[in-house]
Length: 280
Figure (cartoon, rainbow, N blue to C red):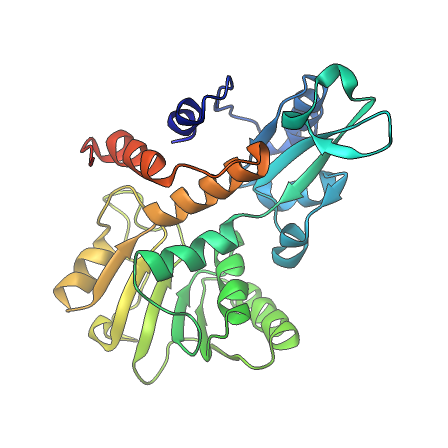
């Protein structure tokens, strides 16, 4: 996705993947800073850890409490901090890391663009209160969701998230557990569904899928998880997380480059790579 976009924009950059153990994250970031990387994306379990490792955090990282995008910035002779993409590295007297979060905006955009769901005023059942679930819940509340129902294996984590939402977004009603009535949207923010043997992240004895208008699974591979398959058979509109992956990556590229991301090129590259089915 990113390399296809870099080629489209004519940028002489390369996007590479590195596996970094959590206990070595700080060293990896410091090394990238020393080597004058343009930027970095972080995935689980690094997003929460990185928040405290940044020299400065954008308001998006502060608001959602996680960093998934890092931009390296250089201090010029006149004292200004500018992205390294805009200056010669030799002109940078110092280099700092600024943290951003592009996940929250991506989930909202994917729901609107791909799932055709408007979060404002919606009743939403959220499965999972971990890193991804927390960001999704807070973003839905900030978008004006009417009610959030939180379901999580750890009741303590769900309770803490519910308390945070009530404090920050008091207009949104938060309830622990499954709803009694129908909902507009179910979001799966757990990792259950990545493998064929996984159970669905949903207790069907507690709630019937047919009572949900749309089911959104953040998992994008496989394209149709068992949850989405059952939801489709129950008559729900379904959508996977490919759009969320696309939009968070596109926003990251714009943060690094200062250019508009070529969404069409990026989406096609994702589809070709993940599903082996190129869509022109």
